[in-house]
Image (cartoon, rainbow over all chains, first blue to last red; front, side, top):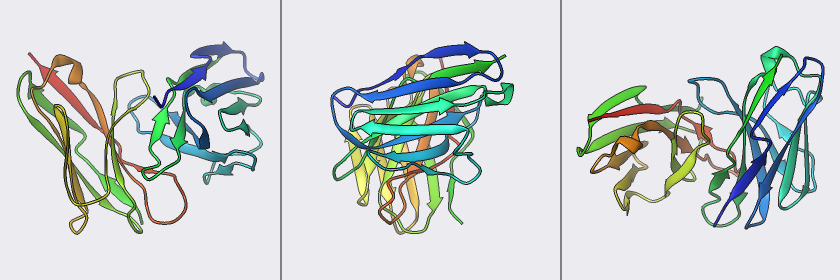
Length: 116
Length: 111
């Protein structure tokens, strides 16, 4: 149980285009989903916390107009990187929190974004 | 401020035991997690501690001392596939479910 999928796994796009990444909890309902980015050999950096049906809470320094998050249902959250630039190239990972005593976060497999 | 410390790198031998330490200073405490992350992949959940003591799960065990702000992950009978980064994460007090992450310990298991 507690499987999270993420799509696409890898994307290459031109500078200035937008990219949408989907995160789905496959076998449980996730009241909260998290979006992270990770640069090579660095730890996870939380970008935003997303609750179903409400606006995402962004971490300091993360532009909400550039990284659009939509959490339309208890099993789906999307991250759209708008007007992507080469410095947005990174590994983007979502996690879904299984509501309960531990609120453990289960991670999707990640999306490798390369902006040319 | 909030801070989590763990060693940057560790090396061990196949079949041996290794202990990865994590110390934390957070505004309140509401659980500590250990995750394993192989290069190029997403983290996978290993263990959760909220009360003091040892939690054992197969070859992996995790210990917590809340009074000392200290945890360790113990890996027994090391295998080559255990070479990975091990992340310690703490959930601070409050209704916020987000985690504070350590920088990870890169473990290399040698034959």
